[in-house]
Length: 300
Image 1 (cartoon, rainbow, N blue to C red):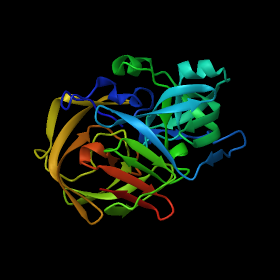
Image 2 (image 1 turned 180 degrees about the vertical axis):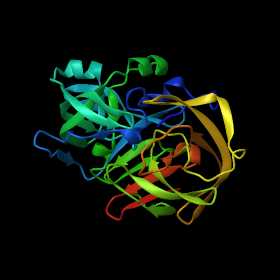
Image 3 (image 1 turned 90 degrees about the horizontal axis):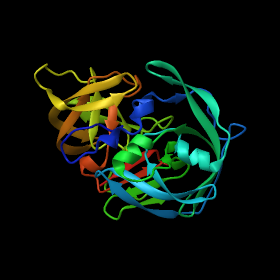
């Protein structure tokens, strides 16, 4: 999930997934499976370190090999499931697409999907993955670079992994013991954690594509004058553009006090299973780690 504003030099293209899918939370593939027979083949080295470039302070872009095509710019996003490739890349791969039904908050929509033969990130490989196909022309124009697609949780969740924002690398196959930890509240189809915002507990999706913390309307009990409407900030959803308000309040994750933060509140409905999105870079996290064996999200 990405929201647009004129502060922090955020780019209008930051709502790249929202152009088709709305909130990443509302994408539910009813007939998608990970492979021809509903299973995926994943083969990986014990550990693969993949460098990345950081756009807009939080947009993680890695180089990947897709099929036989090398040096493809892929966005790494823990809030996306399933993964996506661009229409242009799908055309170059010459793989037949098929129409799929996807459930969103605004009803069923038709999207295109295909079986991706192989994706390689460093020494990490995954094969026979069913992915969605999306047009990224507008985002590419705004970012000034080609985008081959999005590496989502269906690929990332195969093994533990760590994102280091200071070293600008993703370590696939390794969950590093960091200073702070909180258990996952859920793992599928998305990773969520329980978070305390303004003294109230909410469930947030762990989303590397979000700058900091965004809540959906009605998820906090606050007085009408506590959140301040921002006339220049908005978020794109499948239902159109939604206004943003801002609440300056205390945030805690597990037993760790994260201090005072500017929390975005979107005037939009979203998934009933969680209340908003938790980004990493804007929260001041230098490293985040995902330990699936122990069901922990770690950060420092």
